[in-house]
Amino acid sequence: MERDSKGLAIVVKSERIRENDRMLTLFSLPLGIIKAISYGARKSIKCVRAPLYTEGVFSLSLSRGGNWSLKDIDVISTHGYLLEDLEKNMAAVLFSEMIISGKDATAELYTLYTSAIDLLEFYDSESVVISFIAHYMRLSGLSGDYQSCPVCSRSYGDDEIIGFSDVEGVAVCSECDTMSGSLILPPNARRFIARTLSLGIKDSMELRISAEQRHRIFRYMLRSLSLSFPGRLESLEHGIWELQ
Image (cartoon, rainbow, N blue to C red):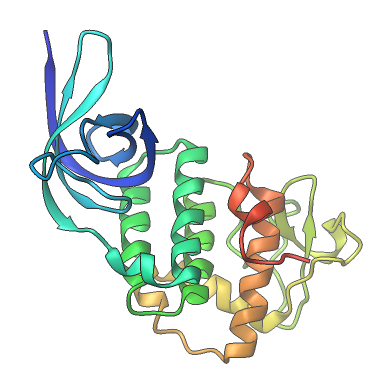
């Protein structure tokens, strides 16, 4: 017997399979990270379409073989603006890859992901990327709070420059630094990230910082992510951002 499911979800990846069908990777609130086939997605104007980054209430059917298929969708947003800007699209690709690779599917991460996708329409991609990475890593237990060293637990001084441990994969005090100061975070930048974490991702967009400082923090977050994330992120290896 087939089993139906209906609930809020967003398409985080879309791949063509066969001539007219697509395999969708969905971040679904009721089901987690799943794959669902969209039959005839390229063939008929009457078929149900769910382009990449489409969010809505998805109606799915589970076959005897254990495969989900898309039956219907009540669309909330297609986030079409992501296809009009290379950097915003690259940011969305990174967010999706982190969600898929991380395999966490909590309601908090769903809200973080969909909020970040929405914010890309109105804010510069660097600000959204900084906040998404900081909040994702914190929610996933992969970073500290940028207020104290996660290795020795010592609170940072107001004007302290912190380093990084490539053993633990986190920002640390200078005494716990295992990279000989090659990845450091100045006091103002550290306080900015700590403040970002104290706010929700939407509220953090209102924090004021110079474009130059924002870009430095952006590059730091990408480089630290490459050392911290437990899985491979192809968007960092082959994307548009140079990490060196």
